[in-house]
Length: 167
Length: 250
Image (cartoon, rainbow over all chains, first blue to last red):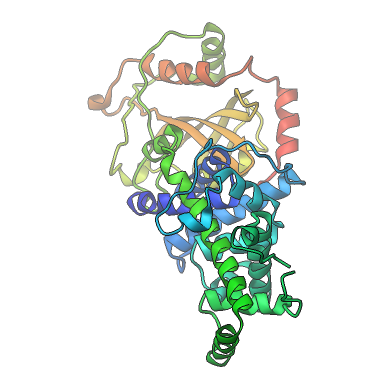
């Protein structure tokens, strides 16, 4: 199991980072997840990767609840002044700083943020997301669309691409 | 808006689902037909795609940051519950003692009267030597006071004392034992529940090959405690209050 978990760690860490927007919080979340996975039995019918994401997601939801109110949006990036430079996306990104994306993600309502992370980062289908969160598939679709729309608005992607604005 | 006042949230929902290839054939064809004749809709689709790509790229940024050592250490020390074959032990060098914590630990019963064995990542222990997982007794850490004992499923849990670590987390030092094995453990409570920080095995002297000089065991624990404790051990009253505040996690 340890070997499987080690192999899964980078993807799980990305998911944790997507949820938290902070390297420190992501690693805390990842650590809590790994500790749970190593110390507790996994349901017999579950695969390790799905179970790992479930544990991670539930821990994050608990963490959010424990914080009661999400901390105000901060523009203090963990990765100072780094820019996204992935080939093929340079024109799109126009040197949007990671910090800006993090901040924008944090401004998303928690339910939208979670669905976006599950679909875009974890790679779940709508059906899988709906089942995991026990919500209707239509709710997944609408939350996801609102998350993307809001993210584009917060990052002013429309103004970068011309005159198009987000409604 | 930019000439697309007719755009509705439903459009965005369809466009978003189109991006993910989650539409039925009829819906997909309808969207593609609309896109073919509506440049503004195409631009809108592109915005949603870009937002999605940014969300994915944002997550990948953490790849450039090395994993914290505490996390990698976890794999070396944590118990593999699924395999149930690895008992976590940590070998630590003697680095001097904090007299207070040592005395407290000794007074609390951490002095061994038998031979000790400290093994780093012992694989394939004897079947009878597997210790229970934290999940099976973590509730006892929120309910059994130091100096008391609780027996469950054939093993005994004996909290020795409690303290606050540098992060002000509630931590407990306790022994788990059966007739076959005995371990001294340190666990701390975090938002996600109890987490085992260390576990050192103390075996009876019945196996002379496993003998290790008495004192090594307490040295290992004391060194760790010195590094972890933010102050004196908690009184029973303080400990009881923290147990009440904690309660079961998740």
